Image 1 (cartoon, rainbow, N blue to C red):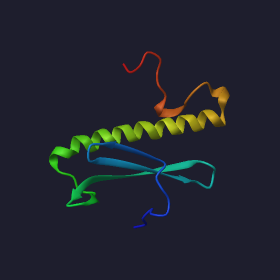
Image 2: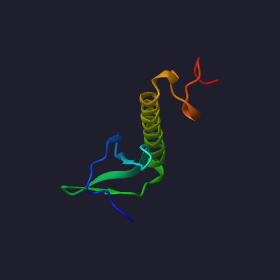
Image 3: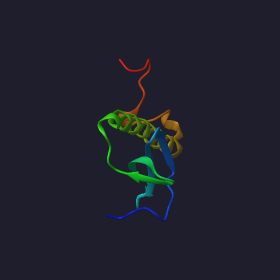
Image 4: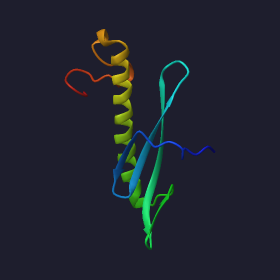
Length: 103
């Protein structure tokens, strides 16, 4: 498994001890691919540590952090699509916001 220690994440979402880091990788066709790591941060004595293991009471926080991270990535995809085709009038695909909001 390859670690991404050379580069910093382009975005982070944190709620309490749960943190998601977003990594952007440019593709050969000029697009972008986003990968996410989720961790629980805790203090062991004077030292801060992290783990990829979560307890029962942290799972809802993990879900909320994942939801917020997903929303952020979708917004990046939409912005990139608008930059490529400003005449499109907005985002396309499954993440398009419908007039009047969700039904």
